[in-house]
Image (tube, rainbow, N blue to C red):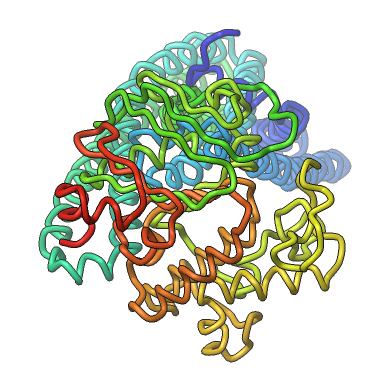
Length: 596
């Protein structure tokens, strides 16, 4: 498969709108041809009607002039409509492609990129590439309009026609050369703007944290420097565009002046008639339109090519993880880690017995983050394996892995909508249903008869309500629902900003529990709640997840005390295993990490 480049992205975007672009080009050409014929028809009116005093000829050619105006008006209206539609559709298709790539189960698109930067690529850059679908037909129409003008001038005067025919290719070549610096500056401009937008989005999302640690000034200074760099890049791009447009317009003006001068000299020498002179002067004035259009089109093409390069970089991002094998057979939930090395972890060996609540404590929080990323299939380990029921995760389809092994990150996001929508996954028909096999035995009191079946929506609304209530109660989020005007159907603001940190954490935990995955990994799920609420959550999680594998990566004594087994990881390797009470009593490093 050929390498994905900016040129290929641009070609594919245009190819997808070929029908609309072609229609727009034909109609826009009709508009430009009509514009070019206006001075020609006026010249004919002067020679055949005004000069001869013939009323019939005057009415005839005035009718022809009216028909020309009607045609060019119709062509402009519907040609512009098709061009705008092509631009919007091309941009939309690119935005969908970018969204699919960012959300791809194998990941990788966000590596080294801030969320705001990706949003900028999917909006601003996609829009600029889409704009090419609008300007390309206009560029074609401008060139053909010049050709019609040249043919008309050839009929008036051979020297004038040759002057336009020979001068136009030189003008186009000059426009292409002047567009190269603009393309380079445009790429830098968009890159700086995207980075600054990403910083802004991160600052807004973490405003409470920044205030809590007193880092507002440092964050503001970082944003100021990024904004200044974006401003400088924008000024440079604007300067390049002004030089591009100004130089081409100046050259165009000189070219048109030469055309008018040659036409005037020919009329003075009697080589052409008065009507022909009027036609030539009118044609020279008309040429300002297509030549100016070509200047604008060339600038948009330069910016579109630069944006296409940035889009191609995101679309061609290497996948963070691989694997495509299905996960078959019953899932018992047995996890085994062997020789795992990644992000500070080194030759880590770890066993999680199926059906148990297992605690994992890391002396370094960065090691916990690395383990969460690996279990969630966000990254591939440098070496070593993680197996689920004997299946190497690196060989499995990431979506299948995440359906069976759910990792609930510490910083899970909430969404604008109701509490119910945030806890239960929406179905394809828009209804809210749990992402589970069937209502689990721990929630309904019935046997889980479909434990080995595929993931499907709960069949009954009563099962959904039961699951929702149980998940809310186990996570302590039922107290959050009680504070909302609409209860579980109460509205949450964007990212759950209408809730406190502890409330958001409980809702996120409820969402993880409601998924009812065979294996659930929780990363520090109770850091923002008080001790009484935490104890209630511990008992609720233990009761709700009875018989299912649950791994809690935490330093919380309350959670660890409820675990069947606790593993202590220090210096990136497994140091000790046992119950919480045993490790507190016998291991100094564990005691210092958990009880400090």
